[in-house]
Length: 613
Image (cartoon, rainbow, N blue to C red; front, side):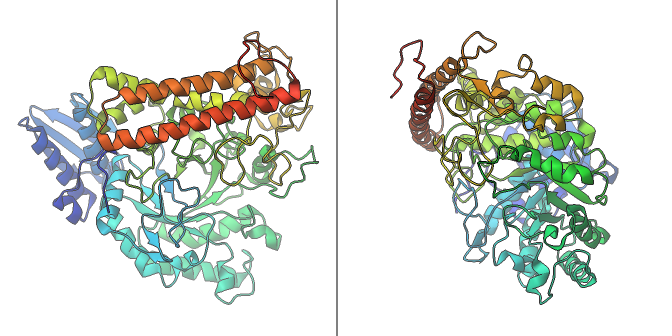
């Protein structure tokens, strides 16, 4: 199985394949790097457990002194290598993580499929069992450690059989898999089925039933005996037909706390996803508003969760759309451990076909979030068995950037993108700057030709790729834009669905006022007539036309830039192939959406461009 080197790391050495601890891995990485660098430099390592995951590097003459905790020493090694490789002096480095839990959520099923997986089949599951190349799993651990990701959840949050057996007869296989990742400081987490007690012969999964509590206590004891550094359990409950405590009249806090108490003796955590809403909504019902759901369910429970339960909240109130406001739940749970959830898998943002660099989007989220409110960060994986690991070779940027920003959310997006380019490709500065600009602008370009002005869910149902403006409009998922001949958008102010009231007063006033609400979120928060004038003087309908034409034109310029870059031949071929698919997608979005709104509004394009009747 191919270990693609272009992500940002050189090939595995024999020493790295055989290493047993992060200290040994750090020593092997630095020895290999300094040998290749051939500058007469040396390094010295010392473990200081007081530093935890942090580290310190000081240079004395030609010697780099690196100290760190058990995994911190490995993170320090990677950061020292990065600084020196990218031209830094690295006279003195010191760093520690902002978020102690930095997790990759893999939606892998044991039959080898990956839900919303756009990089091929699972790297470690096939045929309803573990099936992997041990060398590639070592490479995976190294890859994650180099980006400072420290937890991998191995299976889909939608737990499908036989994944329930990961905690029973498949536990030895899970333990063997964990051992391959342990030298790189990567711990495992397991997605669990809340109704698992029923499969053991119990008649209930009620979290307050003593026999259920006993079942989970025993399950946790067995699991941690096999994998002492198991991070914990991830749970999706009472969401999209998954079982949960509501079936027994219990709250989510009661369900999560039962599991939290079961894993607490072993230092484990329970990560409880807050992605819960009415997925059987009647489109005729204009009062129920899906973005309101998570706050309505969980905010009244603030303070009710035990201290090793972490509430995992998606970055926006919908579902990883091109642009959403920050979830108000992230701003309101002052007495609950919370985790920010983002998505590397580009489910609604191009599926690792269309270019979409995520760091600028994440920076917008981090700039709004109070730092003390978030204890963890998780990302839905974009990895698979594909030759390039991430489908599009440039999609590896998002994995790298996730780890870097989870470690330090203050890093400038342009800086982290530039880091990744320097680590992955060798090219002249002029070409590197072209690639940097292309990647920095990619999200804006995608947004222009797909979901401008905060419009969501105008995408093809089920596959989630390509335009279908009414695909979800009369469906059950609460995914509406309410376009008619007069206007488009949903009034989410106090006079509408009331969603804005979930924000702190300052943000509520900001979004409710048409004059201060940013145009890029206008149709998320407001219902607007087609002839209404926007901040730049254009009418809404003209802005819709202009954005879609501009987005498509910018995609064509991106294709020209990409053709000119001196990429390795394998990367160039794959990137050019996917860019051709992106151009087709951009043109389809431009024409379908413009025609959709032309037929409603009857308004001609002021510039006389082709809009199909």
